[in-house]
Length: 566
Image (cartoon, rainbow, N blue to C red):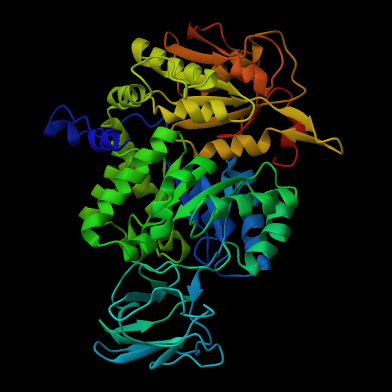
């Protein structure tokens, strides 16, 4: 694997000329393939702002339970649902856990001012009042953490940007039991909704889910049928198994897990974490404290490539921190976003920029505009070849199952005929994920076919959750078939093409690749037994008018699944 990672880390295809760089982008019919998530907070919880974020391209809404009450997040989610109905756009919902995060306790109402060179003590004594000389922290004991003279500690506000005016970098001078005497390396004013503490190279033995996380999942997450749970400070596969057990115990069998890799343990155990996770989030803010600055890019490229090879969608945080307070990113930030796309990131997750930033909508627009330009320079065919070489030089590798062979064949066919669109029929969303794994140049219109399953006690309709979860996959635009919509073979495909024509994704004469079940009925078995076919969009493919709810709509009568959305 290491040789593959070394040889294939960026897939850049330069523009034809410098003059072409100045040309205005005229293709506005297809949005950026890269997905974008927003951390919702005080600046982004009103219906009006949420509508603008959805229209700008937000596909994932992150509810961070490191702060705020369940009532607060419920009000935000209710507003999001209103915004989705008003805009006819849906987005995936993500519950982000607090995990074993360490915070400062017993803070005064006023900000805490610190000066460079002064002494500051960290203590595990929860009865102490926080001040400019001592900060009580939520961790039970410093024993076994590895904290020692010379260790680096960071204290900053929730969703910190790393600004030296609001964050302090500490160097440990002495450890006395459950107290660490430190020196401040810079002057700052500590303020914000919460102050988080990050100890470099620390081994954190706390449970992967805090008591507040368990309550949030069992009450808020279960009641709202959340799409994803983001597992903060994931250390190993065992952590993910604990979370899966909790989700299943409260009926969230369809909820998927995103592993947040943000410490050294997570990096070192990333292979086993990726294997058991549904997706991965590279949390660069915390990880950047654990790694030397000159090593950060190595960890980033290796992790992105590992996720790409495994076909697990990977998102990255901390991209345009300056847009928290400024309407424009720095040149370095803009280039960073572009390089993430070229290195294979499936999505970007905004933090402080949308949580407390002054320009949340403009930030979404700016980041997605950069992503779209980067995608135009992404060498899709070189990327495809690199994956196929890894799996065994275009032969059916033992690790390349039938479903993935079908997906790779669809992508290869699309490249050969220069297809304008790939249409995928799926039940679980897995076929869509596998097609997206190969990052084709063509957008992937995914028709989610509902399925009804029983655990012996009750029946469950699958489809809505799976469609929203597909909003995490780069290049995928999910739509949904009505479970009661039974028409002769090919009718749903005709409706899908009709929709693609209506929104400008295809025109008459365009080539389309279709990954489709070979006979009526949908199930995991049928998805395994699918076929790939090539069609040409013809003017006569235009069924009777149908309402659409972009990016998730129901083909057919619309009533069973859309009545609670319209």
